[in-house]
Image 1 (spheres, rainbow, N blue to C red):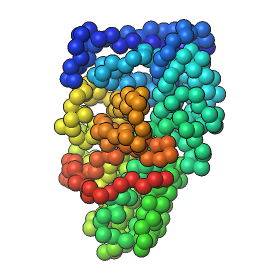
Image 2: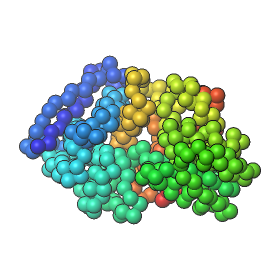
Image 3: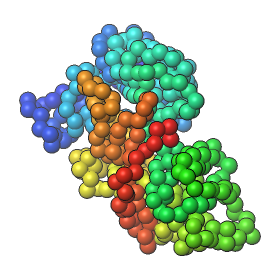
Image 4: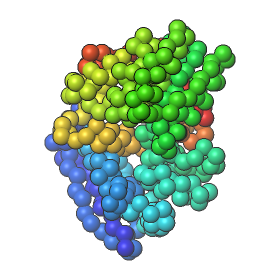
Length: 371
């Protein structure tokens, strides 16, 4: 039996100021029974709050989403929060229950398998903003839009930055993990899309003898390095890489700006991440209060995703073309890429002596369709 919250936003003030904060509005959460819900037009927020594996992540997205309801303009609909497990069948059934209860717009699912379940239905009755992605070979229903924190997109975006370096040969270092392999593929596809670019792959190792060989393997005037690795493995390799060769990575490499010694070991690595973490003076970021100091960096990213999911939903509820939707979010500059994806353009930064230094990206770099 599934349950939902009803998020009813009641504006205390009769006039809504563009600088309204959480004290100007109130969010009420009520439990209901999704098997016999009251039929009412509403927005359905579908999250795996009953999943042992994804409940923490889902709760962060929910908190960010609720924070945005209190900060942004009120909606003409109530919001029902449907709690699911991470089982694709359960998610699909709950989705159908939301439609039967009068949902006119759905935000979610959050998991990749859940989004795949939605995509397999072929025909969706209402616009659905999924918070993850599916395999590129899947043909998506026209009303299904993808938005999230996909690392593969970041790998393509960091490849865009690497293409401005003047180097022609990329050395991609990855491990045997599924995510690392996807990052390697995404970076290589964008890199090879430009004429004259070559690449080779090296496997991550902790063998001392092989690590000693890395400096020679990565040395060369025309070379750069892409690390399809997490922060710990990138840190372990950094000292063995030629310090004069540019090194790139995704946001995996950044675990926070409060660990000077850790970040100092990543010196020189360039990466991309969201304004929520890198630009506290960004206008969109300044509109929200940061009360999440104790949370991990990954949880902060999910909180920011919840904020921008709400903001993107409000744009999609407007009578306008998806091609006209573009705004500066807390996760990056958000815009539409055909056929069904909303892409975040993140901020580029570099580790410099344990601190972060923002990088001014070229204005003419654009995200290529299909990446």
